[in-house]
Amino acid sequence: VSAPLSLWLKETEFAPWAAARTETVDVLVVGAGLAGLAVARALVANGRSVRVLDRGLPGHGASGRNAGFVLATHVTSYPAMRRAIGPERARALLSLAHRNGALVAEKYGAAAQHRRTGSLMLGVAGDASEKAVLTEARSMLLEDGVRTDWADVPSGLAGFDVALRIEDDAEVHPGRLVAALGSGVEGAMGEVLAIEDDVAILTTGERITFATAVLATNAWTSALAPQLKVSPQRAQMLSTTPAPIFLPAPCYAGFGYEYFRQRQDGRVLLGGLRAQFRTSEGTTDAKPTEAVQEAIESYLRAHLLGAKGTQIEHRWAGTMGFSEDGLPLLGELSPRVQVIGGFTGHGLGTALACAEVLGRSLCGTATAEDRALLSALAPTRTPATFGTH
Ligand SMILES: Cc1cc2nc3c(=O)[nH]c(=O)nc-3n(C[C@H](O)[C@H](O)[C@H](O)COP(=O)(O)OP(=O)(O)OC[C@H]3O[C@@H](n4cnc5c(N)ncnc54)[C@H](O)[C@@H]3O)c2cc1C
Image 1 (tube, helix red, strand yellow):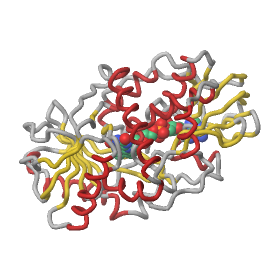
Image 2 (cartoon, protein in one colour):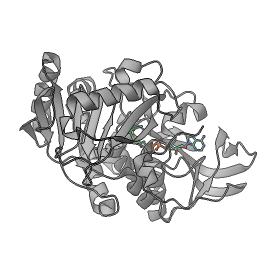
Image 3 (cartoon, rainbow, N blue to C red):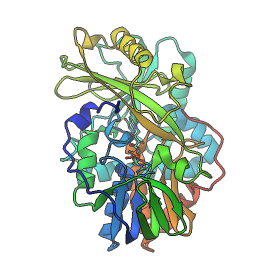
């Protein structure tokens, strides 16, 4: 049984690519999620010829199955991350996310139904430790130039007693974003079994010879590059029939484990509850399970009172790729192979800007800022030890 499509993918048309054939290319990008497609576009804009390869349709990995939040950072992880990597590098990542947000809005905003709504990080009622982290995150983020302040918990929600608003965060339609990124990109359908020197060997036996390969394979990266530790984590979501609008912005709660938003058409989307099911969710199988879906539905009924009376319309899952320290992997793995991935559940917040950095690096036009980032995010780095989820 193949995995059910997300609400987004059901609403998005992708023209299927032809099957991959043996050929020689300049740059081979493996993976047609938002990272691979954005890298391809960045390289083509710099005059390189690029072939993108995916075993499925574009965006059918995590990129077309997510919640569509474009966030500056994972708020509750920010204090620990900043302590582990230092304020300078933490600020460099915020500035990367800021550039990413501008890219999404300016280049793809209209196509991807981008809305600068801000986001709300909600504190679960009675959880003093979460409140302490939110308070610390607020002061650090303000110091680091992120516009943030306490806000009211939206009426229509129950069980939360504080809300931290991040002003410049946004939401998109992820399917439409992938479709816009993919338009005009030269792609082919095929699964890479292994990469040996300058050749990608496909499961069909076809062979693609390249000058440079870019692994944009996120949760599946370790299969092609076992020296990199990117762990698959399934995340599940559901969406409801339309309800009167009660959520003004995408919301995160419970240290970011739960997330929900309401579309302009009234449909409510909710995902998370992964923390209670750690063993079963460490998989690349993108099929929703009864146990997690039940937990999500109970959460919906207990906390999102504004969705009262709605029915569940869609249920889906996707696979995130978690790096060891929660930061993306970006740059050179070996002289012929580059990596972009390990977005740890937050690719919409940085992948497009990461792709531009990689594009400049591969075209010999990297800035000093790019080089600092490539050093901080080098795939072969020793992971910082602060741990995110
Ligand atoms: C339910 C859910 C909710 C999420 N919510 C958010 C959110 O609100 N905000 C946010 O920022 N992030 C969110 N994320 C994470 C976000 O979706 C990812 O970080 C992002 O999509 C990663 O993009 P990518 O291009 O790196 O990976 P993917 O989109 O997963 O693309 C990787 C591609 O590589 C292909 N591939 C892998 N191996 C091979 C191979 N050997 N040969 C050929 N093709 C291969 C796959 O088929 C896939 O298409 C969520 C994820 C999920 C699952």
